[in-house]
Length: 93
Image 1: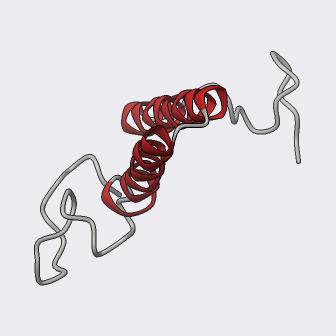
Image 2: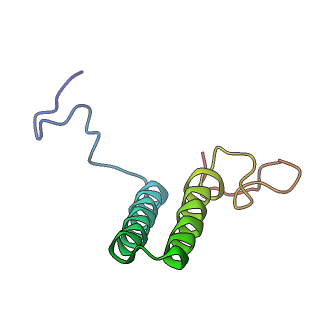
Image 3: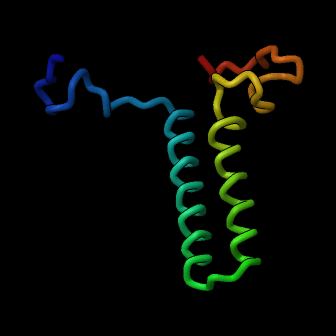
């Protein structure tokens, strides 16, 4: 790997990130914060209802991150139709 002269990052890896990739990373971070907050609330209360709610929110967050927001997953309704054909979106590579 060749380091640049301006910075010590290899191949300018941190300089240019596509806008949709930055939005995806921010969304991933947001869902991680939600899951941590809900599970922390369950740990503090030890209530069965809060546990059920935290489980549902955690599973939904995993679904959003792994299936729905993933542009490489053909089961994603956001990027593919119900038959598995890619929707036309110029932002996706």
